Length: 467
Image (spheres, rainbow, N blue to C red):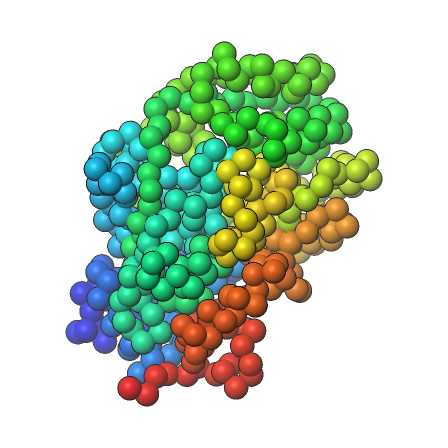
């Protein structure tokens, strides 16, 4: 097999195999793939897809390795790893960035900043790969002004189910291009490169406001009234963090695409909520803001040089807030955060609206554009004995909030959501299945909670093309 690839092929006896087979979520024991292929050029991906078909071997696709449910790994199959497809170029005349599918967010932001003081909408975690982020939608701290990551996407190169490399855009294979913008990764093929429209950036204002935990009901009530997705200045993207009572505080952090003197009047309703524990407002370069929210200290080259992301042990899930929370929902949030199994339990509320909601829900595969915001229920632990209690807490939190929320974000996948097709895709599901049947009629690209799981049973076994 190695003779057909220029990338690195790891088998169970290879040096580095044990590190490469570990998921970044420590909740999962190490997997045991038959092979892991690190692809260095798109042709390596083509060879790997065709090889898997010839040998009737199931496979998964890995970019940044950040799948919450370890869907980029498997036992006794092939892992096609695209993390070495990391070429990033910027055309200053067309203002287009071409980004290899294995590129990590920090290196993208650094490269584009240095190339022309430009960026793309994206998340904050420095080691997340551009592939998974984009294909699931992609949210970040400039999204209310510039939209989701998929809203800046203009084209992709993709290896399809036949192993062919195809260029996909709104003009060429528009049905597939529609589906790739929000359906999540690994459903239709292996993307090897992305084309993005870039955004000019310079300086931004970042802020952090913190109150005593006892202020949680007041902060939440004020935040949701203040954070109206339609009327709040689109340049402002705030995030509300509500941790366990054990931590003793609640916080709003965010970024404003303008100077502090224009931000302060916008923050006035929040600043009037009780007595703040902490207020920090800084005017910094965009790239320094990126590093701040990524939690980066020291030399960024250290982060850029890392391979697999640092492992955490956690259970996260999500839902969307469609309407203002009534008093009962706020009571549930406060009560649930008062009874956590450990201190590293929280819920985060990301505000939507702005440019996100100006795109119709069916214009791309990302359906939940009319939400007020997204909730992410999170629990982290280090003691294996605490795993069951933390998982139960997260699931209970989501269940108790279900009367006040809808759906879920495909990039925050949760294997325990029963009706996940409706939760992730809403009214876009039937069209997505039609695209799946057209582009992957033999159901080659398969994984738990993939569109493959919804195709009729005769397609459920691994099939391969008869050329």
